Each structure stands twice: as C-alpha cells, then as structure tokens.
Amino acid sequence: MSVITVRKYLASLIEKGLVNTELSPTHLLNDSSLRSCFTLPNEVFLLKLLPSVFIVYAYLLYCEDRRTYQCHPSYNTISSVTHLAVNTVMKSVSILAERQLIAVEQTRYLDHWGMKWIGNNCYTILPIAGAVERFYQRQFRQLEMNTAKSNPAKERTA
Image 1 (cartoon, rainbow, N blue to C red):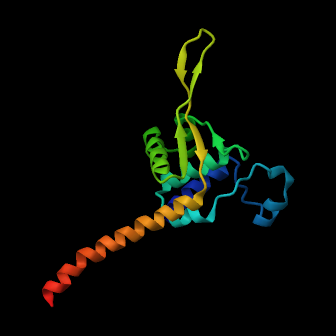
Image 2 (cartoon, one colour):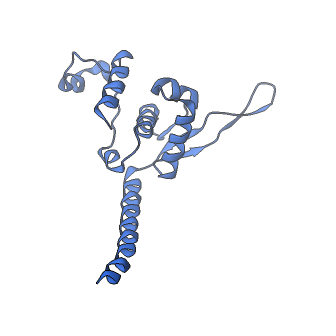
Image 3 (tube, helix red, strand yellow):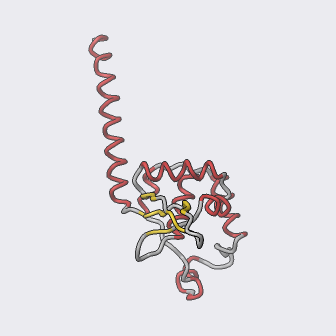
C-alpha cells in the first residue's frame, strides 16, 4: 500500500471521527469511551491484498458480531463507508471469499405481505490461519512451476 493511499484512508478515518490525532496509542487503549475498537490480525499483512480488498476486509471485521463472527452490511453501506465504488466492493468481497477469509451467504426474508425478497449478504469471518496457509501453499506451487519451467532451459544451454 502506498503512502498516498494510507494518507487518504487515514484522512477519511479522521474526518469520520474514528481516529483522533490528539490521542496517543496508549491513550486509545486506556480510554473506556473507545470500546468500539476492533483488532486486525497481523497475518492479514502477509497476504498481499489489494488496498480495496484490505479496506473491505477491515470494515467487515469492524462490523462483525464478536460472538458469531457474522455481519450483514449491504454493498451500498460498505461502499459509502469505504469510499469505494459498489463494483469494487463486490469484486473485493468475491476475492475475500475466494481466498477463504470470509464466507458469503445470501439471505432472504418475507415482507409483511408475504413476498420473498433477497436481503443483504451474511458475511462470516473465517479464521485467518487457514487463509495464510493456503496463501503459502499457492506461493510454493507457483515457485515449483517456475522452477520446473526454468530447468529444461538450463539443460539445453549446458
């Protein structure tokens, strides 16, 4: 993530009042009025996520119910909070699901007339250890493929 991107998102968080520039990190940890903080697993930085995917993942972690690991924000809500286009949010969600950081389930509900409607997706945050393990397995397979491709070329030149 570039410095410009970090500054842009940090400015957005400050504007929304989610980050206070006057408090040091130790004040943030001790302030009982800031109980709505959430943690972001350190391992997420190893996964080389695109900035948009990273922001969507962070927002889903922010929204999740800590007991059920689920949340239900709409694409429009995620878009408005993260300042990403709805299409970008949809692509980011599909990448997160593909990398098995989240599980996505469509919900349905009945209105008061008995009509069936599609509701917001239900996102379940999955344990990050599995996603990190799969990431390393993909990298290892890619390294093996690259090595296999380069070996025949070395034999021909020798």
